[in-house]
Image (cartoon, protein in one colour):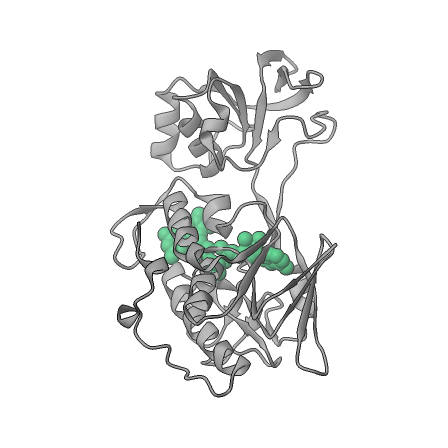
Amino acid sequence: MSDVTVDLLVVGAGPVGLYGAFYAGLRGLRVALVDSLSEAGGQVAALYPEKLIYDIAALPAVKGRDLVRSLVEQAAPYDPVYLLGQEARTFERQADGTCVVTTSAGTTVRCGAVVVTGGIGTFTPRPLPAGTGHLGRGLAYFVPDPSAHAGADVVVVGGGDSALDWALMLEPIASSVTLVHRRKEFRAHAATVAAAHASRVRIVTDAQVSGLHGDPVLEHAVITVDGGAEQVVPCSAVIAALGFKANLGPLRDWGAELHDNRHLVVDSSMRTNVPGLYAAGDITDYEGKVRLISVGFGEVATAVNNAAVFLDPGAALFPGHSSDLDTPALVPA
Ligand SMILES: Cc1cc2nc3c(=O)[nH]c(=O)nc-3n(C[C@H](O)[C@H](O)[C@H](O)COP(=O)(O)OP(=O)(O)OC[C@H]3O[C@@H](n4cnc5c(N)ncnc54)[C@H](O)[C@@H]3O)c2cc1C
C-alpha cells in the first residue's frame, strides 16, 4: 500500500500516455503514470516492438522499441512517477475536487485531474496451456532487454509477429532458440517467417510445450508434436508470445460516457462528461476519430493543456512555444 500525490495522473503508459507525461512536465505539472503492464509502451511494446513504424511525424522509419525508448527519454527530465504492473481500478472525485484513483497494487493516487490513455484497455497475456508446470520460472511475456538472454537456451511459443520477432532478435545472442507453434501456418508477416526459416532458429510446428522442468531453475522443455511424439530441448527461458486479451475493464465504471462499451466519448478539449477526467489516444471516440499514434499525440497535448487550465483556471490554455524555453533539462545531452 502506498500513496502518491501529483497534479495529474495519466492512466496508460502507451505511446500517447508517455507523450502526455512529457507534456504535463512541460506545463509544470507533477505527473504519475499507471499501467497494468510491467513495461511502458502499450500496444507498441507488447505487440510489435521490432516492427518499423513509418507514420510518426519527422521520423521516416522508427522501430517500435526505439519510439518507446525516445518517449520515455523525452519525459524523463520531468521525473514522472511510474506505477507499472498496476491496474487503475477505481476513480472518485471528492467534495474538495481531489481525484482519487486506486490501483490493483493498493496504491492510492491523489491528483487534481486524470488523463485516461488506456488504449484498448488492460492487456492480459494469454497463458501457456494448463499443466505445463512452468511455475513462473524463466517465464516471460516480453523481451525488454534482449541481452538478458545472451548465451541462454530460449524457447519462444507462438506464431504471430511478436513470437517470430523475438525469436529472430534473440537468435544471434542466445545459445539456442526454439520456436514452438501449434499450427503449420504462421500469422506473422511472410518475410519474417522466411527470415526465421533461413536463420538458426529451430522451428517446431504442430506442437505445444507440454512440460517445463528444472528446479530451482528451468533446465529443459518437453515439446509434444501432434501425434504424440515428444522432444526434449534445453531451455532456461520461455517467452510466451501467445498474444494478449484486452478489456476496457474497470474504466467502464468511472462514470464517463461510453461509445460501443469500449471507448470514452470526449469533446474537442478531450474532456469526458466527468469533471477532471480527460482522455486521449485509442480509447477516445468522437465523430471522425482516427486511431493512430500521431493523432493520439495531438489529442494528449490538447488534453493536458485543458487539464492544466482545469487545475489552475488562471493559467493560459496555450502553453507557449517550447522553442522559446530555456530549460537545460530539456536539452539532449
Ligand atoms: C500490430 C499493430 C501495428 C500497428 N502499427 C501502427 C502504425 O504503424 N502506426 C500507427 O500510428 N499506429 C499503429 N498501430 C496502432 C497503435 O499501436 C495505437 O494507435 C497506439 O498504440 C495507441 O496508443 P495509446 O497510448 O492510446 O494506447 P495503447 O498503446 O493501447 O496503450 C494503452 C495502455 O493503457 C494500459 N491500460 C489500459 N487500461 C488500464 C488500467 N485500467 N490501468 C492501468 N493501465 C491500463 C494498457 O496496459 C496499455 O499499456 C498498430 C497497432 C497494432 C496492433
